[in-house]
Amino acid sequence: MSWLSICVPTYNRKCLLEELVASILAQNDLNVELVIVDDGSTDGTQKYIEELQKNSPIKIKYEWQNNSGKAAALRRAILISTSDFIIFMDSDDVFEEDAFETIKAGLVKVRALTDRGSRIAGVSFNTYYKTGGLIGSPWPKDEMVANLISIRSDYKVSGDKKEVVSRHIARECIYDIDNNERRVPTSLLWSSVAERYDFLFINAVVAKKDYLVGGITDNIDRIKVDNPVSMMKLNNILLNSCRYRSRLFRLKSAFNYLYYSFWAGRSVSIGWGYYCMYPFAYVFYMYKRFSLKRGV
Image (cartoon, helix red, strand yellow):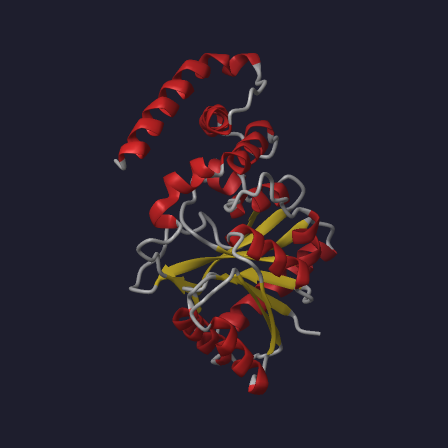
C-alpha cells in the first residue's frame, strides 16, 4: 500500500495539473497515490488523466463529478484515498524537490511521538510562492508540538501551510456539506482535528503555490458570505474551543459567528459576554452587503 495519498480537487485546470504531476514524478519515492476528483471540468482534464493512467509509475485514482464545488470534491478525495497519510494539493501547487523525503522524515518523528503516547495527527510544513519567498510566517520553533488553532491564535502564525495528516483522523473529523454550500473552509476540518489532536510543526518547505486571478483567494469575501453556514460552524468551534488562550482571537470568532449568522438568516444564541457585539456585527453586515452589491 502507498504511504501517502495526494488529494487534489480540480476544475478546468488541466495545464496546471500537468505541472503538479511532473513535480510528483520527479520525486525519489513514487510509492504514493494521486487522488484527483474532477469537479465537472470541460477542458480535457478527464482525457489527460486517462492517458496518464495508462503508463504512470504511480497509482492514480480519478473521479469525475457534476460541478458541486471544491469542498465536495476535496471531501470525496479524502473518502476514497487509501494511504496511511494524506496531503491536500490545489491544482496550481507543486512539490519542492525532495519533498517526499522531507515528509517521510517528519512522519518518522510523528510516529516516535505517538509511540510515547502523544496524540499527534500529523506534521505541518511551510510553503513558498512559485515566484519565491515564504508564504506567511514560519513556525516560532522548529519541531514544536501544538494544535492547529493555537498555532494561529496564540503564536500568530500566518499563511498557507501544508499539513500531512492521518487518513483515519481526517475521516473522523471530516466536514459535512450543508445547504448545498459550494465552499467549506479547509480550516473547518483543521479546527475539528485541533479539538482532539496536536500536530508536529517543522520549518521545512515541501510545496510552492500560486494565487490565480479569479481564483478562490481572489474572491474570498464574496465566497464566504455566499456560504455562511460553513463559516458559522467554523467560528462556533473557534469561539467555544478550550485549545487556545488568546482573548482577542475569541472575540474575533464571536464577532464572525454573529456576522455570518446574519448572512445565513439564522438566529443564534451566544454567551452573555458577547451580546454587546450584536449591533457592531449587524452594522458591518449591512456595510458589506451594500459594498458587495456595488462591487466595491
